[in-house]
Every structure is written in structure tokens, then in C-alpha cells.
Image 1 (cartoon, one colour):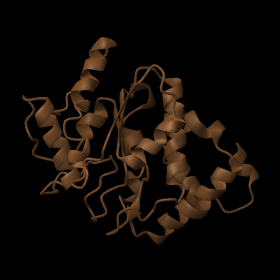
Image 2 (cartoon, one colour):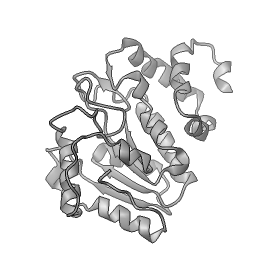
Image 3 (cartoon, helix red, strand yellow):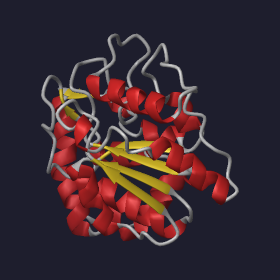
Image 4 (cartoon, one colour):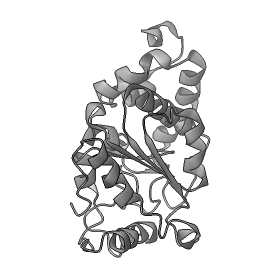
Length: 239
């Protein structure tokens, strides 16, 4: 393994690597370059050493832990975790059970679900674990941010790591539904294979852009229509 050939201290970085579930880690290990590893060691490890980040370290790779590589049917790509301490639970747009009121972006997601699927009822919690268990990979472009500050960890190495996982996922599997919301997420499309997949794009569900394309996008119903067409079990968005 090339990690053993490099000369700097791997203690923090190896903790990060080893916390990624094996099925996902094996997907990309052969693709990592020494330059990329160096960036992640220098930038991501320093973030974790500081400790002023959300979500907690144990939840950084929760999306991969809850959604096995073989079971991925849908990818929803967010921007970065909620900066309010205790709100983010490691899944994009998801919150811990106790968080009330819902973050505005999540509330707008529920509004779009209700608009496009009339029988949908607003949930009691913003925890999206139920989606993840059904094969919805809820991942952010940046897997952490500074407590109290949105987008604080942009260009710290997370984007390259996330892009590599998504690129390999879309290469190795077929008939995935990808939902890319907002300009930051859309930039990741150029690095993925679009053939044999359904790629859906819109504005971000945040209050500033909700009515610029997210409202009325019908992504959730289009997703399930695609699942039926390809003989897959649909996603129960109510779960």
C-alpha cells in the first residue's frame, strides 16, 4: 500500500482513512495519487486536530457507513454540513432527531416532497436515516465545516475526496439517480459518467434559491418513476 512509502506522520490521516468503510475505501484506494494524499494530510488532518468542526469526527463518513456501495440507488449531493453545533448528523441535509424547527433547506425539501407527492406527510424529525437505509447516499461536497460558520472548509481537500468517490461510484454501477442541487453540486457532474444514469439538477433548496428551480423540480417523483422503469424498488420518502 503506497501509504507506507511516504515519509510524513500518518497518525491523524490514517485514522481518517481507516474510518471509511472497507467497501468504499477499496473502491478508490488505487486511484489516490501521492499529491492528493499529501493535500488531505496537510489540510483535512489539521481541521480534525483543531476539533472545532461539525459533525463530530465519528459521523464524518456516516453516509458511507449507512449506505453500502452495492446498495446505492440514489445520490443526493449537498454543500456542507449544518454549522450549528449538534445539528448535523453526517448525512447531507439531515439533522439529529431533536432539532426543531427544521433547517430552512430541509423544510423546503419537505415542501417539494409534499407538492410533488400529495400523500406525503411532513415528518416529525429531520433525521434522514430512513432514506440512507434504502440506498440514498446523502453526501456533501465538503464533509465538515467550522462550528458556527458555513462553507468554512471549502478547498481543504474534501471536494477532491468526494469527487473521487462519486466518479468511481457512477463508473462501477448503473441506473443511479443523481440529484445535484445548486451550483456547487452541479460542478461535480463533469467528473462523473452520465451514461446509464438519471442525472437531475436544480437550484439549491435554500430560501435564497428555492423558487429559482428547486420548487417544482419533481426530482422525488422522477426518481421513483426511474426506479420502476429499471425494475428497482422505489424509495419510500416518508420513511
